[in-house]
Structures are given as C-alpha cells and as structure tokens.
Figure 1 (cartoon, rainbow over the protein chains, first blue to last red):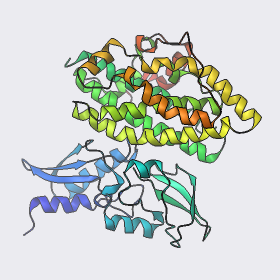
Figure 2: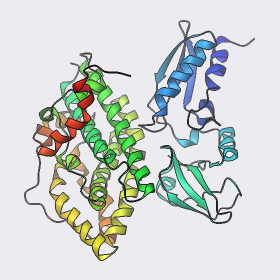
Figure 3: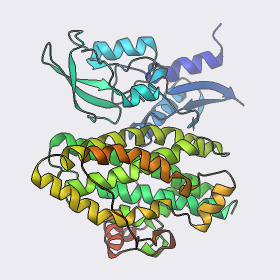
Figure 4: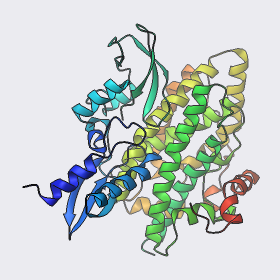
Length: 160
Length: 251
C-alpha cells in the first residue's frame, strides 16, 4: 500500500531539471521533502544559486506534477540550510557524467574545494589531465573545461 | 512595520546588489572576450538573486503589501541607499574588475558573519551568497593580478582604476543608524568590524598585482543617506523605464 505522501513524493521527484533534463529535482537534492498537510501536498524546494532563473520554473513544474497526480499542491522555498552540490545523489552524479557533464566531487562544499584546485575528470574519456577554460558557462551552476587527453571541451558542475 | 531598522538595512543591502547587477549587465555583449561576457552576466545573476531575496524579505518585514518589484522599480534616486562605489560607471574592464574585487572582498566576510544572525531567513540568504562571493573574489582577483602585473598598458589602466575607486572604499565600512541598530540586535553584521577581513582578502592580491591602496583622506560617502552622484539617476531611468511607462505591467 503506497501512502499519499509516497505517491506525492514520487510525482514531484520525477520532475526533470529544465536546464539539465538528464537529472531530476530529486537527483539534484533540491527537492527537500514532500509532506501532506491538511490534505495539501506541500513540496519544500531549495534553490541552487541565488539567481538561478530555473528556480521559479522548477517550482511551477513540481506544482503541476503534483496536481496531475491528483493533489492540491503548495510549494515552499527553503533557503536554510543552503543547498550544496554534496546533496546531488550518487545516481545523479552518474547521470550527469553520462550526459557529458563532469559531476562535482563529493565533499566539495568544503572551502578548500571552493578555493583550491581540484581534479576534474573528463566525462568523455576519463582522463584527469583537464584544464579550466572559464569558471562560468551556459548556466550558473556550470564551468567550462577542456580535456588535454581527448581534446574535447566539456561542462563541469561547479562545487558549491 | 515589524522592524523599521531592519527594513532600512535590508534596503541598503538590496540596493547595493541590484545596482551593481545592473552595472555588470551593461557588459552583456560588450565584454573583451566571450568567456567574460558569460562570467559577468553569471555574476550579475548571483547579485540579482541576492537582491531579490533581500527586497522580498524587506517587503515582508514592512508588511504593507509592497512587492520586491515595487521596491526595485518604484523608488526614486533619493530613496535608493546603495554604496556610491556600485553606481560608478563601468569604465574599462580593469575598472570593473577592481570594483568587483573591492565589493566581493567585503561581502564575503559580511555574509560569513551573517551566518551567525539571529534571523533564520538572513542566515539562509547569507548561506547562498557567501559561496557566490567566494568565486566572485577569485574571478576578479585573477583579473586584477593579470592586468596589474601584465603589460605596460594594462598596468596603467589598473593603476588608473585604483586612483578612481579608492575614495569609495571607506563607505563599505560605514553603518547607517538602521544598519547599526540591526547589528546591535544581532540580525546583521557590524560593517566597521570587517575592515581587517577585507584587507586580508585584498592584500595578497594587490601585492601580486603590484598595486597599492592609496590613503583616502577625503573618502566619498553619502549613498546610505540617499546622496548620490548623477550616475544613479541615469541607471534608474533605464532600469525603471518599463514600470514607469507601463505601471503595473507583469508577465
């Protein structure tokens, strides 16, 4: 017997990220929880970056998914504690890599990783001889890298 | 209003972020290289995100039904409370990078200290912003070093940026009465206490860039009292045009 809460979670968790559709909001760890309060499915969601333009879109998509699953829905934005790339699940990391985006290293929200040099593995050939082209890319969460071994450019999901 | 001092202190911070965001946005399509076009607009996005969080919270504290948009678009320049530094025209790329370093090198320890705020919403806003300011410092710092210790021309331009901007540094450490009260209440950090942390952030960068921070016997201050240069009015003309021309427009 699947409880209403589990059903609501399953509906919300399956929503893909609009900018990186290979991963879901659950894979990214931005869907904190879904609870049933007075018959309303309340989804608590954390933004990735302060100004991530996908935040409102993601919230709307989760609300829509819950309503399609037959729930009355409410979205609450949770700022504290702040989201970190450490909350991306193992499965999410593997999906990112398969999609061609080098996933952030685990334990990456440490200040050392934020400021220091970390090894980024090429998602295409697995080589670690890579270089940063730009700390900023097509979305706030990605940096641009290049692999010196296979010479391919790739995106790296930044560690924050 | 629940807490007028906190409201005013939040408006000051929000205005800093939204005006600097607007300045960075002016580089869109004009940056010297494509990677920088992306970088500057990405960082503008961080700033507008923080500004939105702050305006939204200020509106909630005020409790008069104003929205983040009302606060950003329907106040005139005398009601804006941003630091003078952030409204200064972009100048060249060196000028923009040095201003960015000065600002981020202050906001990083500011948000770090705000993680200890008694207010949970502010801790949440700070938790996001502190990480973003970390890479803003790194990005601007790398450019300040590259240009300051670069060619004869780049070094000259960086030196000119330093001469133009150093008189605005002191205002970073000034507190308005509202900010002072919010600090006393344990809600926001005491700005004056962050001078050492700011210097620790910029000193190694300036040393490597062969730059010195000159003394500023007559620092420029006034933004927190609504006393701005001519430049702010020009920013607002552009930034507020749509809401002023089509009041209440939404999409």
